[in-house]
Each structure stands twice: as structure tokens, then as C-alpha cells.
Image (tube, rainbow, N blue to C red; front, side, top):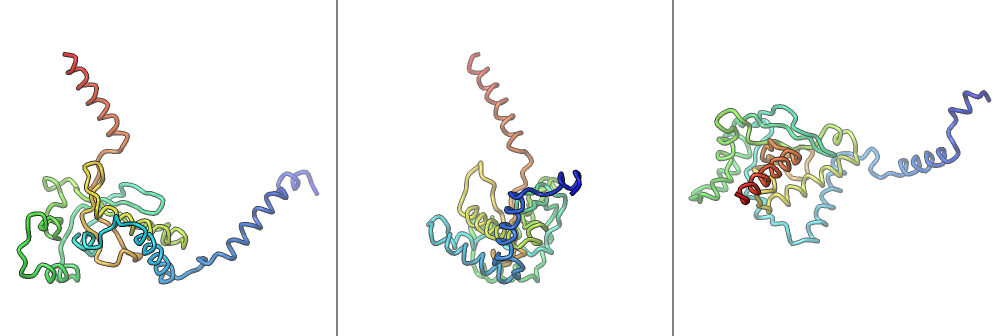
Amino acid sequence: ITPRSLSTMPSSAALKAYKEREAVFNDDPLRGAEIPVLLDTAKEIIKKYSERTNCFDEEREQIFPRFERKELQLSRVLGRGGFCVVNEVKGIKLDSGSAAAKDEAARNKDKELSQYEEAFTRDFVATRSLREGKVARYAIKQLSDACHNDSHLFLKGTIDLALEAKFLAVLEHPHIIKMRAVVSVSPVSKNYFLIIDHLYDTLKQCIHSWKTENKCLGWLCHC
């Protein structure tokens, strides 16, 4: 054994850790699992979560308008997280022949919508996709490519995104981002996405702005 080989040989502890990790990996039930199996697993887990809480509201979840992916015109990436990627929506071109459009038409047939209900229609969301005709109002949140290429990330990401939609469907607060619509497929789907408000300020920028406002208010109070 040469001095060089000694310096590159793994320690006994490293070898033991590697073997333990390899054993876990070989026994991993998700290793090589097909998408339908992962989706069924995600569905069961989401069902169990839902049964443990009374926060969710299935009727409320159903009022959000549905869109198909082909109707959205996406632009730059706004951010990436552990499971998802968020893209800017630069426009929405409605397809009146889509399944989502037909479902909405059937649901609202012969029904006079209130002003509140009108805000949950495809047309309402689509016609307001740009502020002053040029500034994107919405963003789309969907699973990243990394999730689609890793069974564990895919399972966790699918569960996370579906539960996020359930929470956003029932939460209304000025400091919580709003969900405006979802895709016209099951929440437990590899192509699921949310349409949410486009944020133009980061938390760091907001904190700086709030501090500035407080200083100004403090100065005015001492006048």
C-alpha cells in the first residue's frame, strides 16, 4: 500500500455508513416505483391528513375555476423551492372547447351568478391576467423537473402541492397569497398546478418597506 492509497482509502466508519445507506436504498419500496403507484400512495396519505382535520372544505375547493395547461402562456421563472417551480403567467388564452370550459358552462347553466361567484369564473381570471395590459398578475406553481425524476421527491411534492391547494382554498387574509385557479385535473396528478397571485416584493423588501413606514409614522407622531 502506497502513502497515496492510504490517504484516499475510506475509513471503517465511512464504509459502514455507506453499507447501511445501500441496504436502506435496496430495501426502498419506492425505488423504481411507477407514477400510478406513487400517485395512489399520495392519494392515501392526503386522505389520512384530511381526515385528521376539519380545516378543509371540499365544496370551497370546487368553486375555483379550472384551466388547461395549453391555455396558459408562461414566461420567466420566478422562483424554485424544494419541490416546485414558479413561473410568471404572461397571458391566458381561453379555449371554449376545452373540458374545463364545458364543465364550467354546465355548472353555471341557467344560474345568475353573484358578484362574488363571478370572481371564480374562467373569464374573470383570464381577463385580469395583466395589470394595465402589460404587468403579469398571476403565476403558476407546479412540480419541478427534479421531482419528476426522483420517486421520493415526486411523492412528497405531490402531497405538498395538493395540501397547499386545500389550505389556500379556505384561507383569506391580506398577508397570505391568494390562489386564483387550478388545473382541470385531479390534485393527485403529475400535471397538477396552482394559479396564484404574482408577488413582486420579497419578504426582505417588505420588511424594509415596513420599517421605513414605521419610522415615518413615528416622526409624524412626534410632530
